[in-house]
Image 1 (tube, helix red, strand yellow):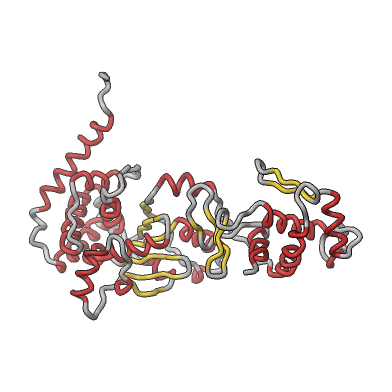
Image 2 (cartoon, rainbow, N blue to C red):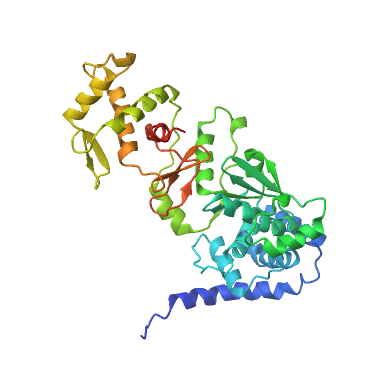
Length: 376
C-alpha cells in the first residue's frame, strides 16, 4: 500500500544509521586496544563528562569501546542492528527484539554509557536466575571496561570478581556456557548496600521495588541500601510494566499474634460445607458465611456470639476478619495454581504470567492463613 508519508520506521533507522556509521569508523581505532588501554579510555570518558560534555557527545566512542571489550572477553561483536537497539534504549524508548537477537548484549551499550556518570545503572530482569546469570556473563565485559558489577537476588547479593585460581580454564568454560549457566566462581557474596553501590546492578523488579519501599521506611540514612535512581534498563518491558504492574508491592507490619488464630481456624474450616455453611462467588473471587455457618463455628468455639467485642480480649470484627481470611485461603486459593509450597514457604504464582514470585506475600493476613492451611 502506497503512503504519502512513508514508513516511519525507515525514517528512524536512517537517522540512527548516521550514529552507527560514526561507531563503525571508530572500530579500527580501538582494534589494537589492550585491557589496560580500555580501562584508561573509560577514565578519559568519565573525565570528559565531568568537563560538561554530554552522553550524546561520547556515545560513539563509548559504544565502540564496549564492542571491543565484548570481543576480547566473551567473543561477541555487536552488529549494527544491536548498536541501533542500544541507541534507542539510551533515548528512553522501547526496542523490540526477538528471542536470540542478543538483547543481553545490546543492554551493555547504554548501561556502560550511563554508568560513566558514576551515578549507577539498574538492569531489571524478570527473575533471580537471569539477574545472576547476566551479572556473571556480562560482568566480564563491564569488568574489562573498568566498571563494578553486582546482582541482587531474593535473600542474597553477589558481586562480580575474576577468580584468582584457574582463571584461564574457568574463563574458557564461562565464554562457552555463560549464556545459559551461572558460573558461581565469578560471583562472590556481598551486602545489598555494596551491590547497589556498584556501577551496574542486575536485579528483579520485585527486589528493586521492595528495597525502594524499605529505604523510604528506614529510620536513618545508614540503614538504606539504595543509592538513588539514575538510569534503568528493563528487560521484558511488557511483562514488568504491564503484567507485573497489576500486582501492587505492599509491605505489611508483622502480626505474629494472629498466627494461633489462623491455625485454629485452619482446623475448623474443613468441617464446613459449601452452599450450607458458606457460599462462593467464583466471578467476584469472594466467599461469604451463611447464618448456619456462623452458628456452627460458634458451637465449635463454644461462643454465644462471635461478633462480641470482648471475644479473646479483642475486637469481634477483627476475630471475624481472621475467620473470613482463613475461609478464603481454604476455598478460593488452590495449591499449585495460586501458590506453591517450596522449602517450607508459601510462594505466590503470578496469575497473569504463571511465574513464581518469591519474597512477595498476600496482604491483610491472607498469607498467614495460607501458611496455616498448609501447616508451614
